Length: 280
Image 1 (tube, rainbow, N blue to C red):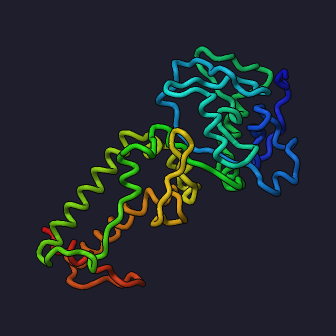
Image 2: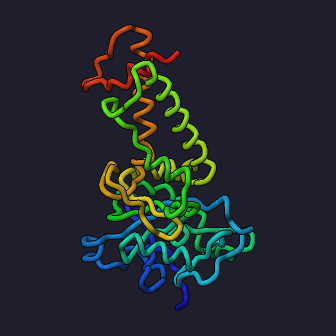
Image 3: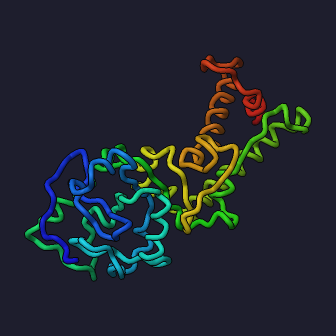
């Protein structure tokens, strides 16, 4: 199929193109049947790839209908990524490589008549609307395999027991909490180092919009668990829960230590904060 040379008109609320995973081709958003959009809708994927771009080379076996080349990356092929995208669960997805004009030193030059630079800017500018209207989504942590130990997996599975469950003596609890705090910070540091999605500026914005989105690993597998915030699979929100809870408790502990009494926060103060307040 020869790529069409017509760029669909811009709609500030909707993407210009979607990728048809079944047919492996990009199609104008307006060509997708309305009953599909009203039903399963389209999905989106958040991931980071710039740091492994393969010297501006184009990827092999791109979908049909593109007006630009898809960038190649080191570590996995486009065919492997295509398999992961099936885990989104929709036929049509918004995938930046296929739906936002791409360029690279060794990639096909843009057709000047199509003004793809302007098109690129317009598609990026409405990303919030594109994410908001998507019915399904995944965050692809392609540097991680759930079957193996990793800092990000440990961070997700981290669970602090309530003080009632602790066997330590009263005077040992502050030391244990200090140890726990150091452990959380160490896990966070190593998660940043090993999984770039956790520290990319682009994905930070996407993560805010996708806090209930499930995390998938390199192979498109989800991480199951009974204690996760939004269900039985790890989500973006679960990455922040241990850190947010710890920061909140430390802030309350600082108030108690400096003022000598508990602040009114509208909910019961965890007993653990008093142990934090006893730390030097």
